[in-house]
Length: 238
Image (cartoon, rainbow, N blue to C red):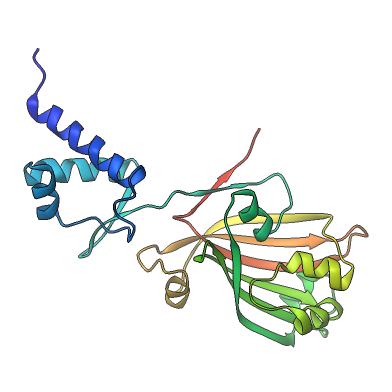
């Protein structure tokens, strides 16, 4: 049976569009031109454009926002699960510039839940540090860290935007992370979180909770982080 010319045209448009997205970075603002503009660009019908775009959406290259059009999915950052590392280390390993912006830093009552996570009395205060984590200046995660009072007081006095918390804990507090326990689940982003992460069309996040311990087995931090689900992929080797 002879090849269908419509099939050949569709495949050609899909391949050219993928090349423009991945190799030429033709859409740096991540929004594709309108269907009419794409029809003029490739000299094909709207049906052909819709099929090519729909196929790229199924492949995970594009995603749609109702009433706004098709957008390019940025390449996902792979997050290994079998080692303890900081956000700054992870970004450095990927030749990306890690950054952070402090959203809140205050001394608060621990309460029963946070106290249980840190292994302290519920009557003790803790320091809460909330930061927006950045990679190459792009928002990636919202991180809320709870620190025991002795460590937190030092960190609160010295930390600033774009500083590594783990490095500061080591140099200023003499604390080195020896091990950690971590859980991962999916959670819904609140409206203000979606605005902070500049992903208002993405309703879900990967929700990490981590308890980190020093060499003596003392819990030195409890962290809750929400990572953009459109930018992170978890990987492990079995």
